Amino acid sequence: MRISFTAIGIIQTPFTDIAGMPIQPSGATNVPGQLVLDAQYEEGLADLNGFSHLILLYHFHLSKGYSLTVKPFLDTVERGLFSTRAPRRPNPIGLSIVRLDRIDGCILHVLDVDMLDGTPLLDIKPYVPTFDMRSDARAGWLEQSQERSASLKSDQRFREKK
Ligand SMILES: C[S@@+](CC[C@H](N)C(=O)[O-])C[C@H]1O[C@@H](n2cnc3c(N)ncnc32)[C@H](O)[C@@H]1O
Image 1 (cartoon, rainbow, N blue to C red):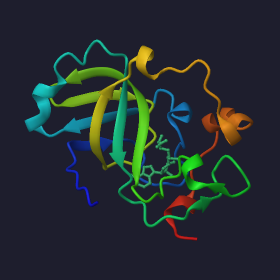
Image 2: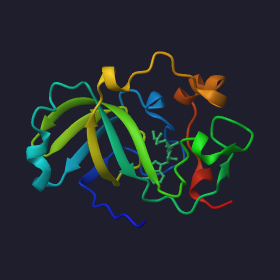
Image 3: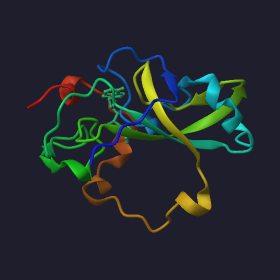
């Protein structure tokens, strides 16, 4: 089945190069970004102000191809693609939980961004602790290394085919 989406806006961030950028919002604390929504969607922002965090879905637009096993930033051995957050995937969709600072018309000012400048935005959803927080969650192979996500930086690895 072929599915086609249209971006609802663009994400502006300070990151113009993959090299050296954060690999998750946990490594991008307080990094500001803007979600510049197309004007036709502005009415849909009503009532979003009361939410502290947003779930963003976006297109890894500079990601090319994929491999079903990858050596993730946070490990030295190959892992199955779907057990990772690697940007090179069959459907290159990214998911980040960011903090909402304020909304000015069609522009949402957010914090903790971990995507490249110019990334096409596909959707915005409110983060709802009751729906989204899992106190009993396990982190699989990441159990040992997830804390390092705050300090590790990105490199070119995910941009190229193996
Ligand atoms: C490991 S992914 C995690 C993104 C998101 N938090 C997730 O879990 O889906 C973050 C990395 O993807 C790459 N990246 C970010 N924005 C991108 C874009 N628009 N196109 C291609 N690669 C991108 C950078 O290497 C960045 O460090």
